[in-house]
Every structure is written in structure tokens, then in C-alpha cells.
Image 1 (cartoon, rainbow, N blue to C red):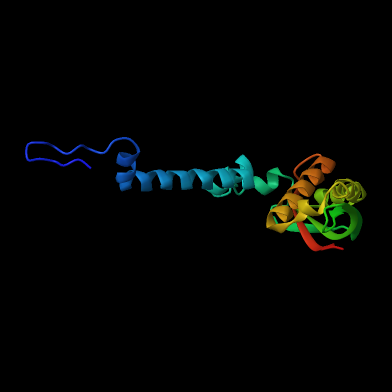
Image 2 (spheres, rainbow, N blue to C red; image 1 turned 180 degrees about the vertical axis):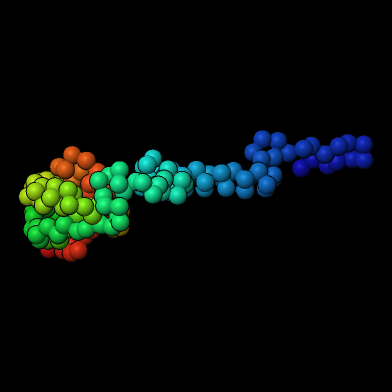
Length: 180
């Protein structure tokens, strides 16, 4: 320990001690890090289109439904697909692979119009086939937690839009999801 005599000026803390001593700077950096993490999480969950829709209030105008082929009154309809039962890969308590059954009831939400209804009814068998192909490649771990359910819905919606060759399908609803 050094003693300070009357004529000497005490040394100022340097480096990390000075940085940690400035609490305002530390809290500011922590806040900035939290905002960056929130932004990254939103981008990962919603994508760029979702964030622009969230910030811009949805970005829809009164003419948007007519532009997408929906009736001027708007609204949505559901295409209920038959229940699907597929094999997925599971794991035992010791970590070895095993086969599990997944039972799933899916509905596809689409814009209400006669043209959309005809398209979705025509494409229903192809939607079911596309969904089953994807579902058979899943593992139990892919479906864990709310993140697994969000990913499942996003992947099924992506396939529904690919089958219909457009953005007629608006959302996927999961009625039942059972894994045995």
C-alpha cells in the first residue's frame, strides 16, 4: 500500500477499474446489449417481412384484399386436412434411436374467395403429401417446446405456399399434435 502525503495527488484508476467505476457507462452498455438481443430475437422469429409489418402497423391498405384475389369483404376460410399419422425418429433413455408415431390434425387458413376455395380444394391432396414428406423427416427433438411448434407451423406454411405457387395460404393451425 502506498501512502499519500500532503503534496502528492492520488493516482486515478485506469483500464478496467475506471470502466467498472463508471456505472452509467456499464448500465448503458447493458441496455444497448439488451436491445440488440431483442432485435436479433425478433429477426430470428419473424424475419424481415414480419418486423416491417410489426413496425409499420401491418402495412396493409384497404385495397390489399382485392389485390390478393380476396373478396372486398375480406375474411378467411379453413381447409381442414384429414388427420395424419407418420413415423418420426425418437430416442430412448439410453440415447439409441427408436421409432415414434406422430398424429397431427392440420388446417390451412386462406383468404376467402371462390378462386382461392377452388385452388385450395384442388391442391389439398398435394398439400397433404408435401406435409407428410416433411413430417417423416422430423425427430422428437425438432418438436420440443414452443419453438418447435413455431418452426413446424412455419415449415408447413412454406410448403403450402410452394404447392399453391403463391401466398394464398395465410397460416397453419394445429388442431392436435400427439407423439407416442
